[in-house]
Amino acid sequence: MLTLVGNTKSRAFRVLWMLEELGLDYDFQVQMPRSEEVRALNPLGKVPVLIDGAAVLTDSTAILTYLADKHGSLTFPAGSLERARQDSHTFFLLDEFDACLWTAARHSFILPEDQRVPDVKNSLRWEFERSQKHFVDRLGKGPWLMGETFTVPDIIAAHCGSWAINAKFPVTEQSFRDYIDRARNRPAYKRASAK
Image (cartoon, rainbow, N blue to C red; front, side):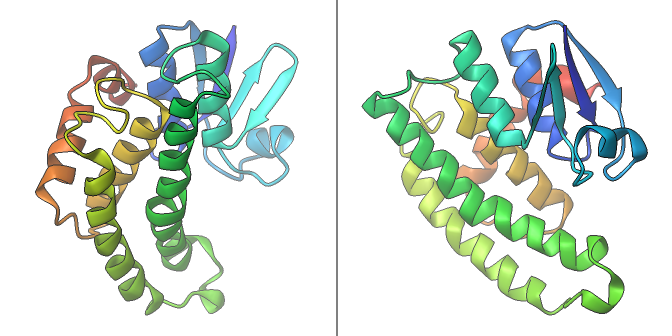
């Protein structure tokens, strides 16, 4: 039995969505970051945490990749050119989307107040908006980043898109908005959202 620890308003949602896409049985323990229960599993206090037997895994992207590889779904085989392209999309998203959103969050409510630089958020919004054009180029004719195959980077991209909308970051590229809507209409996304 897999156990996911986290909450739906964090990157744990990505793992929750992946578990639903894969149709796996799991237990979902709702915990906030930095809680005692989370720190017992991850000294940094970050979520998500996935427990698989005796193994404790952290970092949403590492968990997504592990689950995809283990179950041979939502991914291309390691060592293939398709996997290299898929991983390129993943790393682009972590650098260009996730990093901007996370840095903005840190300077909004995570860092101690005396360490926050609220003005940095303007440049992060600008960077996020600019990166959408590159995302659209990567998407091409879609519907997903790897063409007809929905993969790990699609979960990250759609999660970042939803995060951006909630954080009032500019989502200016219509094809990116359409992509987010397509992803959020997947049955597994809807099941994860209902948790």
